[in-house]
Image (cartoon, rainbow, N blue to C red):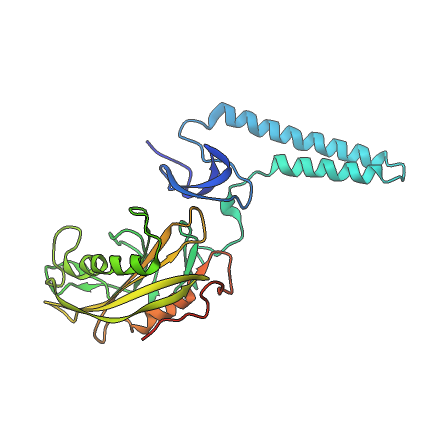
Length: 300
């Protein structure tokens, strides 16, 4: 079955007062208050005669509204009644003729060269020099990578010197950013440097790790927490892995985990880029950031 409606926020068919995230194939559990009235995405096969009838009806409403508007203007007797009726008619025409999905809200574009947009979690991340949007990446939820690939030093395949991954926490009810970050960092390290999804060991496996830094940090106006490890691998220079946790400001406000995977050595990105990206994370539509925990910074 094919779906023509792209991923985005649309009117929730089961709760019309809310918007719900459509992932391109099915509804997810993410909801938020509506920003601009918009239609729910159609299932395959719903468009056809009924959709055409609705379009013709909307066009008819616009035409009738225009005629009523003209008639009221011509019939204005100077007592103010004509102006009031004209406003009401125009409002009716606008309301019925311009329904649009909420994704049309002026917000950062995926084509903006300065940022990458995570619309599901309601954030943007700065795209620093040397970083690009993901292409031909098999890992889920990757927001950006360093430019180019190299031959993995272990079991083979292609590796990248840096990855930034954004994911929604849905498997537990934990809300504490500190607890979430501390629970996520071992999995983040294993998935990055121990075994890949196919069971291979691109770096020969992890031999040891040590804590480099951890502490509270403000993220997109929300209080968050990060944990950073230095990982030593059997093959290659090893790397740095960081788990950053904070509450989303959209939908159900599910916690968000941003993972950073940086190779160590001269070819890897500087660990300071982790702090630069974290400081540049913004809620969609918020240019200034700040808010709760805005004076809290990463400890070194």
